[in-house]
Each structure stands twice: as C-alpha cells, then as structure tokens.
Amino acid sequence: MSTANPPGLGWADFKRAEGDPRPPGPLVVSVAFGLLLAWVALASVLDLHAVVVAVGVLVIAVAASWWLTVPAALALGVTAFLFIDGFVQDAQGQLSWDGIPDLMLVLACLALPAMSAELGFEVLRDRLRHRAATASRRLEGSDLSR
Image 1 (tube, one colour):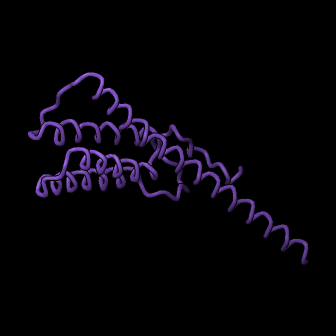
Image 2 (cartoon, one colour):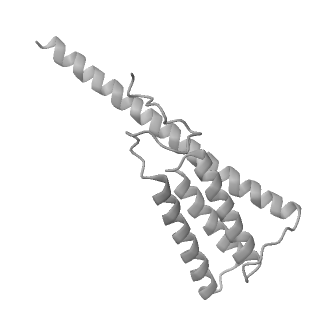
Image 3 (cartoon, one colour):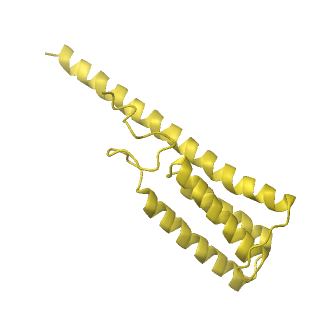
C-alpha cells in the first residue's frame, strides 16, 4: 500500500485516517467556535461596522477550514452564517431571512470554507506524495551504495 494516499484521507471523509498529520477535526472546530465567539464579543464591545465583523467571521471560518475535511468545513460554514445572521445583522441573536442577500451570504459561508478545506487537502496530498517519493529515492540510493 502506498503512503502517498492512505485510505480514509479522502476529502469527503468525516473521520480521518490514522496517519493523518492534521490536527483533530473536533479540536479545530472547537477552537474556531471559540474564536468566532470572541471575535463577535470583541466587535460588539468595540462597536465595529457589521461588514468588518462579517469579514472577520469568514476569515476565521476559512482559516480553520484549511485543517478540516470538506463536510466539517461546510458545517463550520453553516456556523459562520448563523453567527453573521444572528449576532452581526440582528444584534440579539435572532435569525432572519432577507432573501437574496442572505442567499449570497449562505453561498459565501459554504463555498469559501469548502474551497479552503479542498485546497488544504490537496496541499496535504502533495506533501505526502513528495515525502513518499523522497523516502523511496533515499531507499534506492542506500541500496545502490551496498
């Protein structure tokens, strides 16, 4: 079995493979959730503009999604949308639907973290392939020297 593509390392898997070097998904989601809470609370205290707060929420979700699988990143994107819709647009945590603007926000909150997770997965896969190729070249080189 090749070490370049361990089983269970697929982009659509909720559970990761045993040798997956990324931090555990629940840990990443928990840290991201805490950062989202802290950012929204800080923005409330500083009375920041809603657009700045929404962009900050999206940045946190996209950055955290780098280490997640796509389904977990989508779940984090839904959480980001709920934060923006409930705490940024409506200050008392009440959710509302405003039609096309909210649809665009949902699409952004789902697409951006999913793209980040997919890009993170591709970088990880390339890194694992490179490590496997380097290890095989070293192994071939040590066999030739004997």
